[in-house]
Image 1 (cartoon, rainbow, N blue to C red):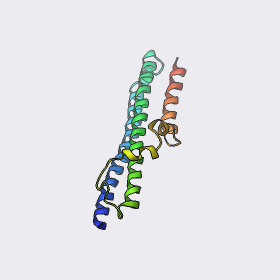
Image 2 (cartoon, rainbow, N blue to C red):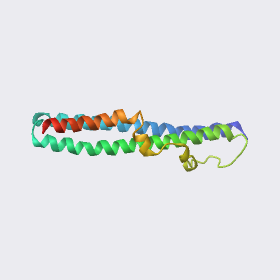
Image 3 (cartoon, rainbow, N blue to C red):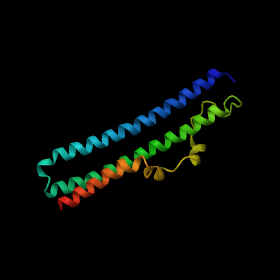
Image 4 (cartoon, one colour):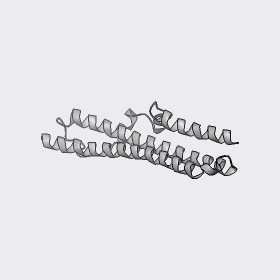
Length: 140
């Protein structure tokens, strides 16, 4: 097995890992921007029924972004497992060369639901969600 092939394959996998990490980062930025813009636009009517409705509506995007972020992190972890397998085994086998099929490695990675409640996701999304719920309760 040529080391050039190994380097090309791990570069390909690393590119996918970088895109997944970038997607996760961008989602967090979009969520914070969305919440800030909506709350800033509704600041004049902070204690009206309209703001309660707006805050309630904002809870949905938090849940959606939370799930999407967990989805991307799950895929990133699957590709990291593939990357590790390629590093460890590529010199001894040509099995699935240049394959980006991560499905065999899904069992090695936590589920998307478990990732949603991991120590990295729960504080960010959970805190955002709880703060909006508290804002809704205070306004009522």
